[in-house]
Length: 133
Image (cartoon, rainbow, N blue to C red; front, side):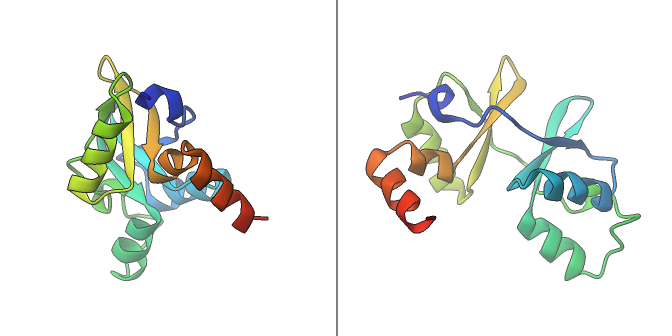
């Protein structure tokens, strides 16, 4: 199985110069787990719920003036959409991350999460479906 077979194709990104307030509205409106941070259409970071909490609220930053680049995680790992799932799992595990932007020809085309991987396995999908009602 390949990354392209199970990745989430609908992705949300935000420019690194936008405020945390702006980014969090995208995050909230779309009920997503992360935002890819870009600069000139290049991936420069990723921001998750944890980043919003720990690097904004816990550090008493004003979300209306603080830029997303001040709280994003950098050194983002990516994977090509034609790689095998096993390689993606290795990257996630080795880097202790849960989300992996997917690229094709150096352009962002999707995101692969541990949830996508879990749902790609029929027995795991059935387990999640049973606990979610």
